[in-house]
Amino acid sequence: MALTGISPAISALHEVANPAPASPAGTPYSGPSFADRMGQTLSSVNAQQLRASDAARDFETGRTNDLVSVMVEQQISSLGFEMTKQVRNRALSAYRDIMNMPV
Image 1 (cartoon, rainbow, N blue to C red):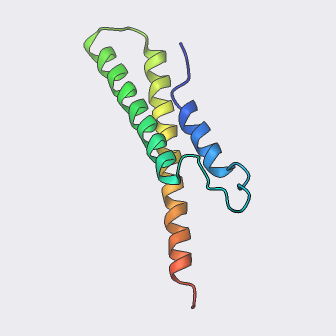
Image 2: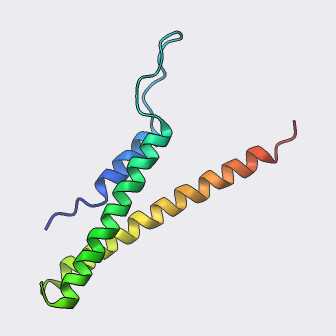
């Protein structure tokens, strides 16, 4: 049983939190944009939620008897969703702080 469902989401958020050093003046940045990285992260969280849903359905219909793997998939899905929710909350908080700054 591999517990790799949340790894892509965590690595993508680490890349967002710790970006590569800025390029020297005059040379354009050629890496993925913030929107691309967030899109990839949201896609991986969504894929993990779908895997957890499929695992639960397989257990409920009797296709598998491995309750442990179903519970692990559910927990990984839950952690990914909570992490995504916290990133959203912090982004909204930062946006509100910026909008409330006096000019």
